[in-house]
Length: 592
Image 1 (cartoon, one colour):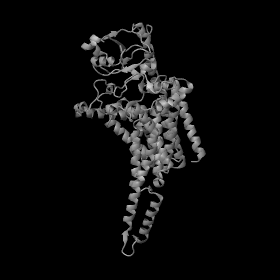
Image 2: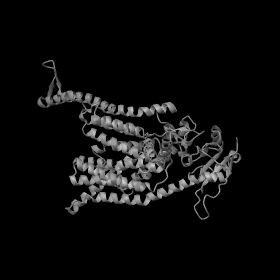
Image 3: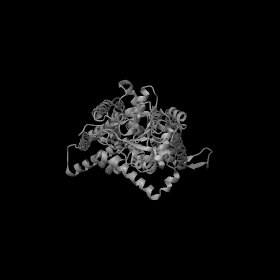
Image 4: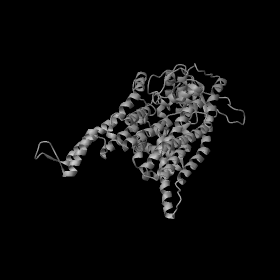
């Protein structure tokens, strides 16, 4: 492939992806899920001069518990920093923030095209088939529903996916030609920078770094040229001596003869281990340099250089444990749940990750990819991506089985979706080639597989994406109507008043500007204790959208009956229209 053809191909894929994502952004006008709203809200506060803060406290495990709440005690800042750029230029709206994810998301199909081109080169495909495979992967990724959807949501999914694919492309190039594993190899240093940026995006960057450690170790295990130039020449000389005479003569004269094979093995093993260390350290040092300023900020703000919440996520028995106030997850409580419960959590997580994340959103391409994956995901181009995918799937399933059902694996899966997409196209390519041989076809038909992928992806995106947008509009209308309804009910709220306890704290805070506290899945007595820790807290707002013990527990528990008075809301719409406030329940806290 010439340089001109490469630039034209990449440009065509980028333009197509950008056009699709701009269209899709018009159908999505509200940040769903709540983590998207969090990134956008903090970016708005940053642009408005308030700094990296939030008006919602949704996690009580990391102090300081005060307003304005310092942001990113659990999540990481790069998506917000990216969203702040267009918001500073175009205004502090969700539509402006979407431009960050649209542009970043449009880069992912370009990287998919590059990955497919590398795969075609590795497999020695004819030029025409290789070009068709690469362009097919790029254009399919441009319209593939899981990738289009998250390209219009300014959260961590697309930035992390781009960084993972970028790291895997660099890792594959190093694996293909280690060049003596120099500590100053610009490819290794570049990989380290990408790993550092990934660490500023999602905690799953640790699995990406582990994948690189394994790839580097595999280079040593297979005897790749990871030795410095001098050592490589020495090993080569020993090998030549062995080939010439069967033995390598050691200094010292007659009788000082060592077996040539032993000399080569000793040299290669020592140089190989040193090369592995250089490959790992060469990436780790720039990664730590990139991440260090944020670690210092976290240390100064939260008392730890690392993101919080990992232990809570690992010990959670239900998703609402992330909102825990009094009943914080503990190791004893986790183990006390019993082997049956713990095994059941992992079974649920496995099928959630496999079906809800990887299969359903991308049907039929994802189904073909899952079937074809074991036979197609091989070769140098795939070496790091396959390791990252396997480690991330296993870690989220086994270590964080509850958190993953709330989005942990989903937001780390963009690059894995590309792996499935490419596996599907490779599987179709092999199938079509086999059918062509059997039937004696003489004209090239490699375009059939990519055509199926592009058509299926475009169809499902066009049909399903608008429905997602309409659901978001209903959520927006509900929280936009709430302040007026509360005022009409005699319990007005304002931005400078006390916080509201609610089960969707980020949405309420970002849509209305009111300070909010996450409603823990705990007793009314515990919620009352939470309110007492934040003076001025007098309201609880609960939605039917989440399967929770609230609001029913407030109507039967003695403390709930005594201290939580229901507040009837007026109708939020004219007769016959959909009431945006339907499903919302409000309680006034009457106990001091």
